[in-house]
Length: 236
Ligand code: APR
Image 1 (cartoon, rainbow, N blue to C red):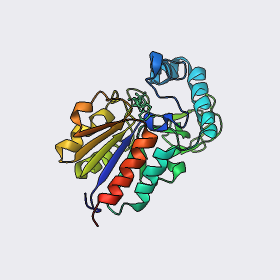
Image 2 (cartoon, rainbow, N blue to C red):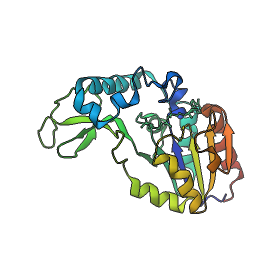
Image 3 (tube, helix red, strand yellow):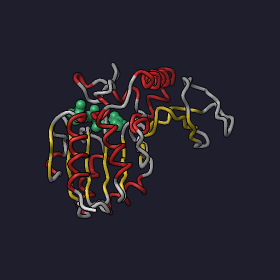
């Protein structure tokens, strides 16, 4: 790989697991005690806004008790040192990539530290709790909701992601089960356009067969080792 190569890295909940944030499809299939469809759909938000808003308030508050781990730091280092194009596309709604220092980063499923106005579409940084009916500073209606992409909603920045995948020389997936599209299909898109593909995960994901190479283990071990290897081997 030469250092002008384009790299796209997809991350999922597994990269934040060792920081203490629960993955979605852990034992029992519950996310922090809830079925994903009870807290992560537009229907759930309409039926029980108090529950959904409180759930994300709890997740937002939990961010203050966790820190980025070695995997986030290694990707931030790669971002800082890689002269070619690079994009980290995260499905995670936590802020651990940016707290580690990553800059070329997209949150395709939204962010806990952001509020979205369902009336006017305004998105703004939000660190406090967000009760239902909170007023949007942009349009004044009480339509603020967590800025989380629910099932059935369009992920953010798909145009930018598709463009990056079409140019990628290397696509790397870290800590994601490959259960949720469109992210689960990125490996096939990248391969279609000629990228080498690598999976770093605790166990083979649903799409493992689509990768040229799979390395199994903890992200905090695999990611720093891969970044060291890439930076040592790549030619200038
Ligand atoms: N290191 C590496 N991988 C790990 C680790 C770890 N320490 N711990 C867990 N994993 C792996 C698991 O083996 C699993 O394959 O991370 C993956 C986590 O999968 P999910 O819980 O399904 O999370 P993710 O793939 O990010 O979910 C995708 O689903 O509910 C939606 O929008 C939500 O963004 C989320 C999307």
